[in-house]
Length: 386
Image 1 (cartoon, one colour):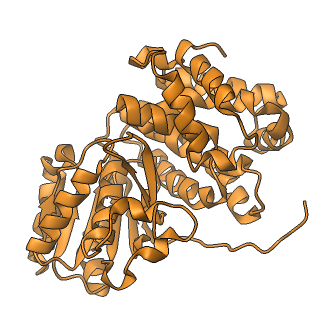
Image 2: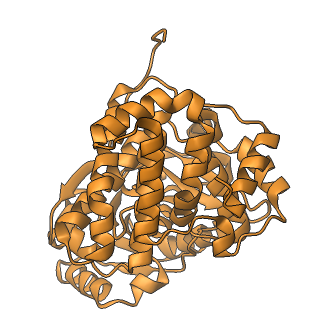
């Protein structure tokens, strides 16, 4: 590979450890946030955990308010409603709390509350991010409660377009959180199925970043070590939900995946985005189901990389052994084998393929699949024909 100019960027300040949510108010104050808008989803908003955090913020003298109108696959309307609450409450920063949907919506509110353009004018295309007025973007403190998306260390968010149902990646460097708190105690209550699905999302990020065909050895190394953390901890976290070491390692693996995927993602995401937008299915679960089909389809380009990864991970059998490990892990933690098992049918394959080939993640897949090839691959994912 001929080396060319590349820009390498790494993430926000990370505060890792059990119980560190107690530092939240201090981090807000350190970054000039006096009136934070606490953004999360409705399920978390109703928990004692969130009630305790809000009480701590107010006890520390912060004028905190909450916004929780967030869908599992966030849409523009969620962001617009959040911006109204942000402005009416005269807030000066955002606490992003929850899984990927809560974190992404929070980051979009911090980005958009003072803009005069549409959120979709800031899609991650070329230099579109320069269209935003950076001076009105508010600071963000991020606190993940799932180990999956890694949005707490990223400069983008995913929002579903209301008309096309396409998942759009919205980007701006200023929405990288100032601080991210990784507190495993906050993830203990996550149900086993969500622990499994979000964990497969983390694995997909690390795996696709590692295999992406671009020169970024820093990200490739992070992706490889992220895969090791998933291999050694995901099943433990699913089966023993109070294992704080396993959950802590999965939080780190998740952040590592989002750090690494600046190198690129690929066809796992290019397919999961349209399936998620059209069927409103869980993103991590989709990634987990789709993963082995894409790995096999990419074999001729990634076999040597996967052989190296298998050796590092202690998996025997090279590429075939690695593929068997993915299938065994999915079975162990309850991830279905085919999309039909979660209610997805063959009726919209043409739409899926047309959206997949245009998805921004498709450009980093090791093989540039055609629309026809994406349709064939999508059909295999639905029917279970590996």
